[in-house]
Image 1: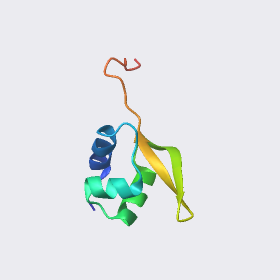
Image 2: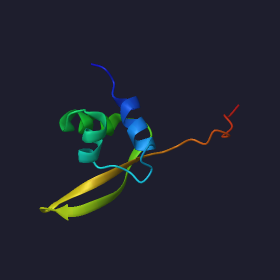
Image 3: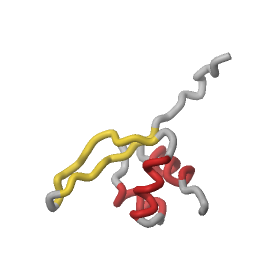
Length: 75
């Protein structure tokens, strides 16, 4: 199975305020079930907040942690 991590990270980087799973599906064309599973294992992504409720459901808003370019690597 091909990893979708880079595609998800790119979509989240392009939307720094975050995206819900439904918005990520539109952005990446990855099915919602696969997207949810991938988000759980994707390095550097996290739930920033919750939106809703809509029809009784809360939606997680996912964001990506960015590493500054000038961040020195430990020696």
